[in-house]
Amino acid sequence: MSHIAHNPSAGAGIADAGWKGLYRVGGAAAMTMAVFIPLQVLVFVIWPPPGTVTGWFTLFQEHPLVGLLDMDLLLIVDQVLVALIMVTLYIVLRRSRQSCMTVALTLSALGIAAYFASTAAFEMLSLSGEYSAVTTEAQRATLLAAGQVMLSTWQGTAFSVGYVLEGMGFLLVAIVMLRSTVFGRKTAYVAILLGVMSLVPPTVGTVGMLFALGSLVPLEIWDVLVARRLLQLGRDVSKLS
Image (cartoon, rainbow, N blue to C red):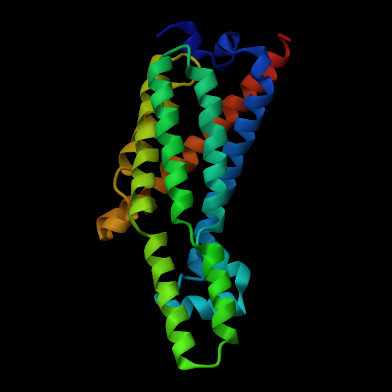
């Protein structure tokens, strides 16, 4: 391994000073994700998601913000943050393997788009409001059916496909990180573990749920490592400009 791989600041020389603002944005996005992960877990522990449509409607009526958080409001924000991180990593790592990073960025973009197609938090909030206002059993039955459709969409095909696509994107980024001197091998190995665990969506059953919960550990570590490195790049290249 060359000296540059052991000296974090040495890799900054290959960074483009014209992208220093993006490095800082990407670093801030990764750090924000690292903060959101334990918050999301805490929400699930304190307020476990309901198991029925009626339970969701009741939760949204009594505690709208908790309902949104239980239905992955923070994860919706995370997808925007992932987009910023992946674009930043593309700029940083493209010189090491541009074709691979292009595919990684594309897979991540498709995964993010698929995830947004599966979100149903605000639709459920709206349906819960309608449910509380109706007066007939027929109207309630219609809204309950609509709520069940939303729940099925939330954890349906689009979610599972998007989850796996993002995992594949992480794996490709990890491969490029191994060949690059910008990030250390520790960051690359953590990304490999994260990518592998993300190939099994939580919708496939107990195994998927265990993989999803387990992947939060490498995701938290990777976010911190990437945030620290990108913010360092943002500082170092500013000295070159």
